[in-house]
Length: 200
Image 1 (tube, rainbow, N blue to C red):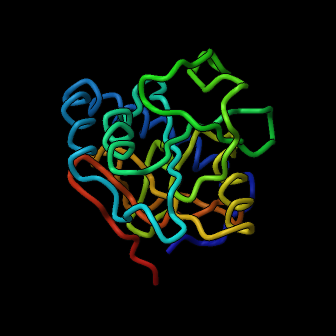
Image 2: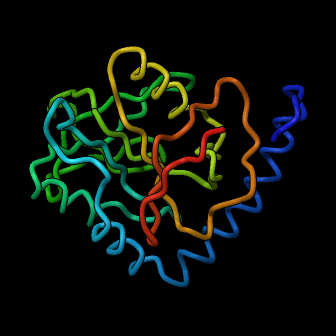
């Protein structure tokens, strides 16, 4: 159990954790990145489309993130409406636009592909969340911009959603440093399968 930390102590812990996590993810990506991406697709989601859960947001892989593109293609074939996030600016939550694998994209922030402005804006029911590390309690380590934490907090006030962290199994750590504004995950999905957080 994490002891109460000052904001400075928490920031320093996260900084060190990110450096270690980047290496673990890079090693995993180099060793079995393509195989892992298709393993995600085989596992699928722990949720089926319907009963108010019809839109799933994925993401284009950035640097050594595990790719969810094969998974999105499978989900689209199963009846899900798929989407991608759009970065609007610093300290702002993400927006989401409808997009299906094979449809055109434009370059977004950091040159990450995103749907064009003509695509429909949607509110996802399921959000696939990239991360640097995760623990058994469902806390994730991101890049430090807070985009997904702000977005999940906003979505959770508006409707029921499921946040599913996406990572290589090697990215699991004993404990992720976290604060009050860090939004926990509902599930984690790795190339080894689906995990449900162990809440105390």
